[in-house]
Length: 88
Image (cartoon, rainbow, N blue to C red; front, side, top):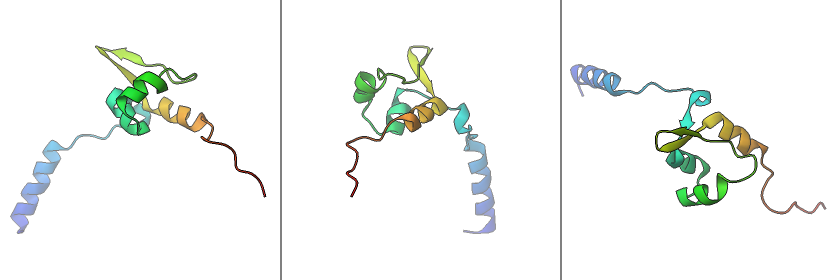
């Protein structure tokens, strides 16, 4: 690539780049929440959202949104899954 093409590419990327929102200000919709938790959407809807202590959603139009930082805090507060290891 010559210098002119690189400059044009940089300008094109600047015009389409999306500003990054800090994590503490992000909101998840159901699809994003499912991806973040690494579960199918149906599992999140049927099992996860109803768990005790799970953060409340905010109604937004026809959908719901969850604060990313509240989801992160909730995850950190959960006990590890499975049985405790036997001590030797």
